Image (cartoon, rainbow, N blue to C red; front, side, top):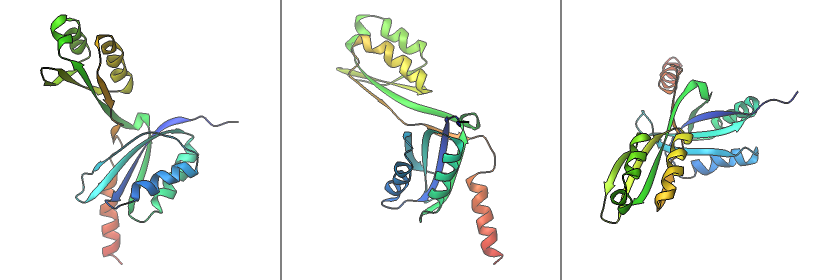
Length: 181
């Protein structure tokens, strides 16, 4: 019986060191796992960074890659969750010619319909922001394309897990264990 691939979000907490991202992505490459999305940012803990990586793979392969990531120097902890255990969003920016707004009210209607907002209005261009799922940011892209879309960029997922015990609790456990030694 063949196992089914599903989408997982992997959260990796690391020190902010040169080369750590390369070492982490190499693990995925060696295991022939494609990264669908990747973001890096500071975490809720000072001096600790978080990588959010989205993959579509079998549960067992994801479990193994997370264990291998945790063996890396400078990695504190890694967690993985299926889609139903995370709240996620992505951000998209759209650059449109400003005249597209003045020639017709259609672009303005499209922006409102998609619950997007204007970030910057310049004489030559207007920047629109949309947060949501990929299907939502793509739907806005598809509608704006007909009005002379100049530029488009979409971030990777950012996510927060629904399970309550995560990195903060893990750090407390490590601290307690080191005090009891």
